[in-house]
Length: 302
Image (cartoon, rainbow, N blue to C red; front, side):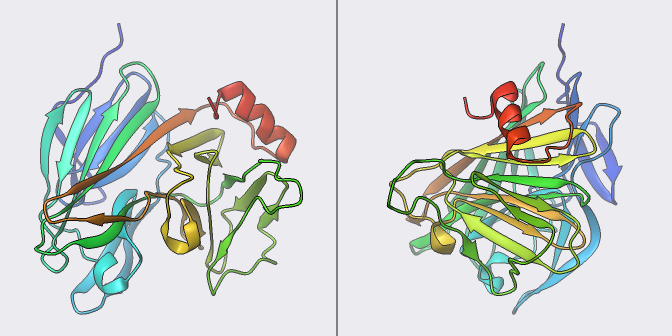
């Protein structure tokens, strides 16, 4: 019979107190000493897929140092360094929920925002459902959206699906490019229905796009990590209507999803849900034909 461990037994990982969430197939480590943050995701007995970045930092203007740590985090869009890079190094509150944990940070003093993640693991599948919640604890309405970011170890290949709608003479796809994005980068391949990003970069690279197909994937050492988030074709998104984004540098690759732009009244909470799946024994897809075979075999678009 399948079992699911949700005890508060803690372990030390990268210098942080973490709680294990595991079944017979996969294990997650959720930080208790800071966050909310998932620091490790692995098949039982396997290697951590998530980036480990104990020394990777940036500046939060007017506040201090922001530590990336690696793993999976929740930000609030749009990206404004003085708001977005608010440090999350304080301990979090953790409450047991069915099949997982609800992790909540203190209210950000500068922004009035409070972040939480409800992390639930299927009892007998390598599947995780994460409900990312932003609550406006301030006195004024705020225009924002939850922004879920997964930092993965380099050396693999990201697969970014593009719209396949047949609009005949009309355009059907768009890409958002950052000022440092170099489209001639040899580690990036553009197909008709997918973009491939090989995480072997020397310089930073980022693209964003509307994602009606709803999934993003990363292949590393025989494991395929897939994250899904709902896309609302009638809604507006930050970053020139990007519901999905991919960032890569020499230390990690990020798969990112955003919720639609919303105006949050004081006391209002907005939720953004991602579903993660892990697939083992997968060969690295070489082209769009291989990707389509994976889509059909693994049911990525069901």
